[in-house]
Image (cartoon, rainbow over all chains, first blue to last red; front, side, top):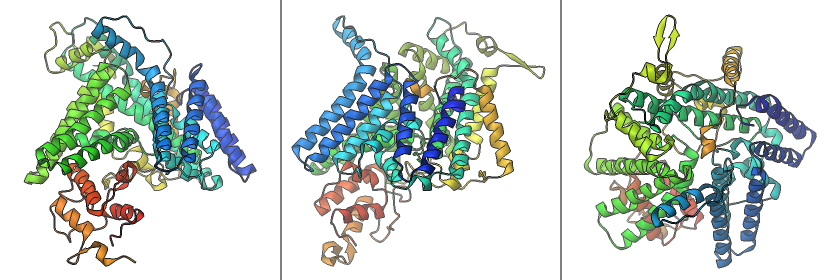
Amino acid sequence: MSFNSYIFLFVFLPIVIGGYYLLTRLFISQRPAIGWLVAASLLFYASLGPGYLLILVGSVLLNFAVARAMGRAAPDSGSRRVVLIFGIVTNLFLLGFYKYTGFLAENINALLGTDFSAPVAAYPIGLSFYTFIQIGFLLDAYVGQVERLSFLRYALFGTFFPYITAGPLVRQDEVFKQLDTPVRERTGVLQIAVGATMFAMGLFKKVVLADSVAPFVATLFDAANGAAPIGAINAWTGALAYTFELYFDFSGYSDMAIGLGFMLGIKLPLNFNSPLKATSLVDFWRRWHMTMVRFFTNYVYTPMAAGIMRRTVRKKLPEPVRLLLVLCLPVFVTFVLVGLWHGAGWGFIVSGAVHGVGLAVNLTWRELQAKYRLPDIPGLVGWVLMMLPLIASLVFLRAANLGSAIKILAAMLGLGAAGDVPPGAFYGTQSLFGLNVVPAIAWTVLLGAIALLFPRNTQQILERYDVALPTLPSPEEKPRIRLQWQPNLRWAITIAMVAGLGLVFVAGPSPFLYYLY
Amino acid sequence: MTNPTAYNIGGTMRLEAVLARVLDAPVDSFAEDSSPDNTFNWTSLRNVMLLIEIENEFGIRFSNAEMSTMRTLGDIRAVLAKKGVAVG
């Protein structure tokens, strides 16, 4: 049962929302309503695969017990630290067991000529997400930032179905603070209308936009994994199509998650903010998968950079060395880990490393720009310099192996093998108003135009209602076109059409791309 | 009420003095909402350097959680106040 399935849309969701609102109106205490959401979340997760539920429940119980144990230990005590380390290591071990043992065994075998085999276990959807959500919780609990912890509240935080499968990576205080407000103040007709609007726009992005290019993306990457030669136009079309597919798929999922949370009176943090309009790689990472960036910034990059800076200040190292050690090294290591978090494979690591190098260059440029008063890079040039490493990294992320990725990138540079076929023969053609068009190119151009030229993104359309919590500070934008949702007939018809198209396109639900990660 | 001797250096505040030194800008050029987003020299490298210099100046240590919340001068002042450092 996925957000984009009929059973979720027409059975699960109406029952969950109906039951939840009934309980919020029948009881003054919000415990029955929270209990209802926990039960619904467990049912939702169990529907995704057999055996998954045990892992999620085990993870929630373990982390709650670890937090309780830390609460009993004195602040800054050795025992509190030991409990924290035990909790983090256990979480990482669980994640590592399901995600990385195969990759580890494969590389040890290749290196040492051994014959280790990893245990074959189905990867539980969302494990990377709920493991990191709970590690963040443990780190906050360690420094005493968790207030009014109860098992029921924690069970909801650890299992809440809108974000359990693919984020956003929420922080404990974002959820717990909202639960302090009486549920009747957080729910109502407006929340249903605004949340449903956000959900409908997300559904449209996923099933109408992202899924429409998915077959063409598969055509390119399957061809790259085989012996077929690939030409430059075909490689660029497929690589760009994947860039837009991933954006609309994941931001569409995030919009749906935010919309669901809003309907249930729990705002979720913003995850995307028109990232493909960014004019630098640094800017891009302030707009793409923002909650993941926040997690890695807070718990990996900042501690590493601060620790190195403390040493360089003590040793009075010169500025170029500081630049390399404090900025370039941590950002590179952080993004290699980001790549590895996405999946076990060299393609994921290279994908992260591409961003690590790109960001190190971008940050170094900014330092030099400030120091020598260098002029700003024109927006269009900056956009190209952002898109090139992005597209290259996504080719590594999507390709079945490094060889396939390199084959596509070589083709994009015009270095593909001879004998490639024109786009029409490669991707297929369709007759449209008497014209012979290549749908792969038409859809890619259309998606690119929407991503780059549509004046407002989904949360901006609903900004009057603060549909999401702020995640990372972003510069204020003054839109030329004020496209703002309002509870009126014109918007009701517009959103009904968006939702209607979404429902028509939900023919056979395709999994969200981030379910893989 | 703050203790003036705790932060005054020749009429300027110690916190602003650290900012001025690290960011290479006049000591009176900062506002409460000054941040890397609106201050020319406040780059990523200097941001990390700034936080470490503030630690050294006031003899304190920021946690990761505190570091992640400090974006503007006002944010820094609020965290310092929470740590019992009077900075105006």
